[in-house]
Length: 159
Image (cartoon, rainbow, N blue to C red; front, top):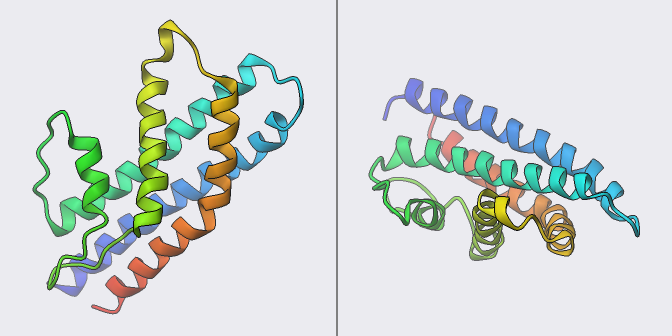
């Protein structure tokens, strides 16, 4: 693989990780608002929107990784789960794993929320569920971002 291709991949990767970090910053502000006893429905909905966006940003990162290293995920009914599951794989001679089992489970839960969020138009969001997930997302942030950094370092060593 050419150095220029890897450098371009890393630039795309870094840009997307930056987008993810920006969303985490927005979510950090939401934790303060949602920690109050009485929370306006608009705050719950806004937090749900950003949790949804966080998973979408991770999914965009996974698409960047998959397209560069494998480029073979079928866009069928299981595409979203298959894509995130693919990030668990250490593909010998191709690329290291991006996620640990723990981060996979965490992001898969976020994937499930994204699905519920997209279909909540008929029943709304469960405020307690949003608060729970927001706290969990912020707790797991350092671990997941750390794994992304380890992956990046391994790929950069190929230059």
